[in-house]
Length: 249
Ligand code: NAD
Image 1: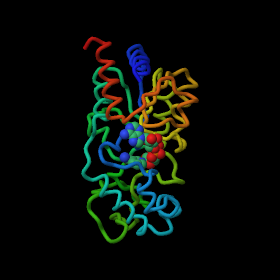
Image 2: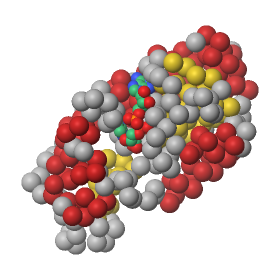
Image 3: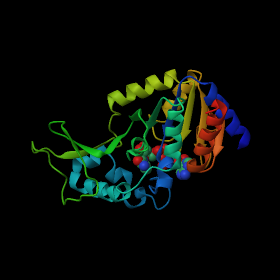
C-alpha cells in the first residue's frame, strides 16, 4: 500500500480541486453495517418489498417498520476516524466537498462543511401531499406512518429505488465531478446508479482517482489510479497524515 499511499498523497498535495465520494463502507466502523453484506438490513427487509417508491405508495405503514429498524441502527452512532480524516483534509485546505450516498449525517457531525447529500438524510421527512419537511426523530417509533399537519402521509426524506435524485444535489455533484482534479472514492461498491457515475464523469474530465475499500470494486480496474486497500478508518487517517507531512503543516 505504501506506493499507492505515496501516489495518492502526492496527487492530493498537487491538486487544486479535491472531492470525496463516500458510501456505506465509510460508516461501517461507526457501527452501521452496509446493507448488502450477509446479516445486513436487506436480509430482513428485502429492498423490492421495503425500499422502492412503489412499495411505499402501496403500504406506507409497512415500509415505516423498516425505517424504525434503521433508526435503531442510525440513532446512536458517532463519526469514526475515516470521517475525521476527511475533515482534516478539508481543514488542511485540500478537500472542497464530500458527495455522500449515506443518509446518516456523520460527515456533518465530523465537521465537514460542504456535504452534498445524494440520497437525502434520514433525519428529515417530507409530506407527500404538501411537500413540507419536518425533522424526524429516528428513535421515536409510532404505530403508523407519521402524518403531516395537512393530513398527508410523511415519507423519510431519502431516495428510495425508483425516486429521482434531488435536483440540487445531482447538479452540485455533477459540477463538482467535472471540476475535480482528484476524487477520493471511499467505501462504495460501484453498483448503485447514478451515484456510481460520479467518479466516472470525473475521470473522463481528467481527474486522478484514489479508491479506499476493503476489496476491489467495479471502479478498481477501470478508473482507479491508486487503490488503498483496508478499512477506511485506517487508510484515510494515514493518507491525511501523509498529505499534512507534504504540506509541512
Ligand atoms: P454498499 O453497501 O453497496 O457497499 C459498501 C462498500 O464498502 C463495499 O464495497 C465494501 O467492500 C466497502 N466497505 C465495507 N466496510 C468498509 C470499510 N471499513 N472501509 C472501506 N470500505 C468498506 O454501499 P453503497 O455503495 O454506499 O450503496 C448502498 C446504498 O445504501 C447507498 O445508496 C447508501 O445510501 C445506502 N446505505 C447508507 C448507509 C448509511 O447511511 N450509513 C448504510 C448502508 C447503506
